[in-house]
Image 1 (spheres, rainbow, N blue to C red):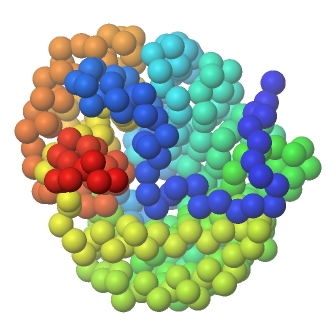
Image 2 (cartoon, one colour):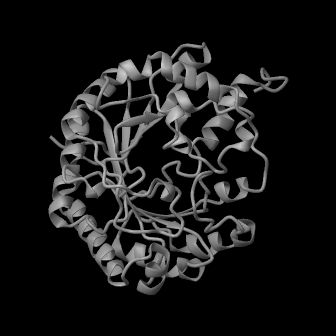
Image 3 (tube, rainbow, N blue to C red):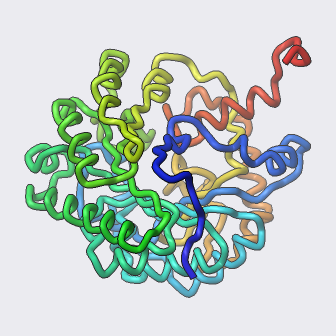
Length: 364
């Protein structure tokens, strides 16, 4: 059995990538608003800790990319329980390259068969035809980090041999062809993290993405992890690059969408409109050792590790006293001093408004 989700024929979407989708989960939000303890909607997991590239912008470079892996038998148990507890989606990504886990196809199919929406974020080097055939039927979406429009720039940004650029392009093109040949509903996109090193390549990459036939091409700003070693884009003033959007969206069509993340770029210029991180109950992060963290910002800081799915059930971790203590500690932190442009930024702004409504709310 494969995915049967249907979309409007001949329509390109923006997928809410530059915003948030918590507004579509009103019941869960209402339980949170009433003060109930809820299970997450979304979980990001790292099947593998190692990586076959050394991108200059990697937010999790400080982890050392050790060859660690989540055990598949543990994963099967976890995904079954996660679904039972209300988890709806899982992204296979994390601190390493997820495709380095030899059981990655089983990870995808198992999560899907247990009723979860599954996605993969990858550099695409290992997404060869055999793996493509095993994974695509079960994926909701697949995103490839390309970050270049030429072998030279790709080599500079990903710090690998130039030939890997053509390998990735070939793999993505193969995935698109396989999707179309089998009428799969999986969304395939290419991501471009905009830096001074690849700025001149972005239009070339847009054209390439459209020629390959992916569904979207996303251009996003750099977000520095507080613990990361690199400073690839900390000095960039993205407001000066906003004009790129007009140049790139001209390539939009009924089948292809450029998602220029202007909203995220402009958020770097303003102070966060919230004081506390309220979004953590709605998501979780599992690293390649099976350790569960409230957020990737705390990845590797043992005092924020809530438990390990290799040793405990997910419900024991999520309902345990250790998680309660950690969440209470984070609830007292000033979110304005935390990571800039984090994954929960838009969600936090939304939840903060719900908890701190302005005057005259009845005048809708």
